[in-house]
Each structure stands twice: as C-alpha cells, then as structure tokens.
Image (cartoon, rainbow, N blue to C red; front, top):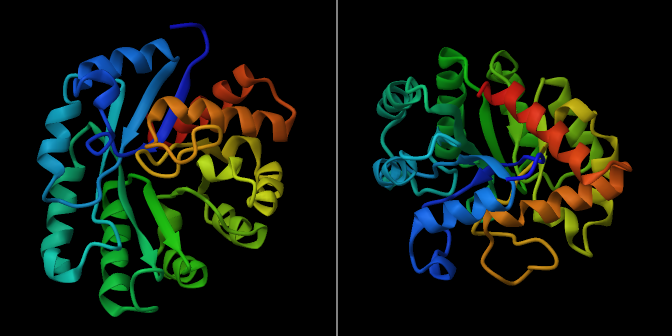
Amino acid sequence: MSAMQLVDTHCHLDRIDLAPWGGDFSAFMQAARSADLAWMLCVAIDLESYPAMCALVAPYPEIALSVGVHPNEEPELSPTAEKLFEQLLELGRDARVVAIGETGLDYFRTEAGAAWQVERFRTHIEAARQLQKPLIIHSREAREDTLRVLEDAGARDCGGVMHCFVEDWATAKRALDLGFYISFSGVLTYKSAAELREVAKQIPADRLLIETDSPYLAPVPQRGKPNIPLYVRHVAEQLAALRGWTLEETAARTLDNARRLFKF
C-alpha cells in the first residue's frame, strides 16, 4: 500500500460481487489493500443477515460495522419498536460497531409519512443517543420529514452522516447545522449531477466524506457495473477536481473526517 489511504465510509460488503476474485473475500481484501483502501465501514440493512455479515468481516481490523434496519425493510419483517431498541443497544455496544444505521426515511418505495417508518427512524435515533454513536442517514424523496425528525428527536446529541447525499444546499446546510457530515457517492460523477457538484464545493472541508454504497451506484467510468469499494477512488478524484485539491489531499482530509466521526 502506498502512503495514500482511501476510505469507503458506506458499503455493503456482504452483498458485493466477488466473481472477479473467484468468490474469495480474502482475495478481494488483498485487492483492496493494494488499491490504497485503508478503512471501510460495512453497513447493515437488517438484523437477519447481521450475524453472517459480522462473521464475514471479523478477520479484518480495517473493516468497521454499523447496526440498523433500512427504512425499506417491510414492517412485518422488523421487530417491534421496543424489541428493535433493545437489539440496537445490545449489538451497538460492540466496540467494532461505530455507527447506528442505516436508518431514515424513504418515500420512493413507501407511502410518504408512513407511521411505522417514522417510528423506526426515531427508535434508531434514541439508540444512537444512548450509545453516543453517530447515525447513518438514508433519505430518499423525504428530505423535509427526515430533517424534521432529526431535529425533533435530538439527533444533534449523537451526530452522524447524511449518506449518499443527493439533495440541495439548503438541505445540506440544515444537516450541517445539526452537526452532521455529508457523504458523497458515485452519483457525484454522473452527468446529471451538476447541481450536486455545486453543493459539494460548498461543504466545509472538515465535514466531507466519500463512499461507494457498493454494490450500488457505481461511479463513472464504471457506471453500469456492480459497484465495489475499490471504485471509491473515482469519487475522491471527482471531489478533488471540484475542490481544487490533489487526490492525496482529498484522501487525507476524508480519512481524518471519518476518524473524527466514527472514532476509529
């Protein structure tokens, strides 16, 4: 590994396509290290697959974990709010777990304002506050409600990150005012993302993060392929070009920011 150290602050390592490495996760990890990838945050989306996800990444100290239930997980497949709260607290006490989530609101696939989704979101916020670990926020077509719940439920007390940010500057500003970080994914490289690139120029340097959201949203020039954490370099390159930084400077800044937020 060279002196440069890249981070991927949001990926789903239990869901990536390992075919290029013969289905061997250890071979993928060798490739990641060779590509200057120093740290990854493997993000949970449900509790059923969580034990297997933990087991997969257990041998690798450069992989941290989050625990949470994605807002698109159907309510009948998720525990009651009380049970979920207990599980989040129990699993979240593990030193390997550095964040709670991903959680939030998603009105693209779910009825806007669905009470169960809001309740689940609030349960995650309360667990994060008690554990004093940051939140990983997913928000799709729900920016106003997402911010309102974060503000009303006291998310400022634990902070967190707006993952895969695709919103406008006004939304970013409200999240920043809550003490949150803003993370950009491969969407930043898309031709259609001109407005988002303008937002990325304005985020304070000490609140910027990068991610892949692997296996989803592969960046240009890999768009259309299954995404992998190694492609975070393309996100970093795009951010560097926008900010007038070198790639090495971008890597160093986002690594420092990730360390500060996730305390690793």
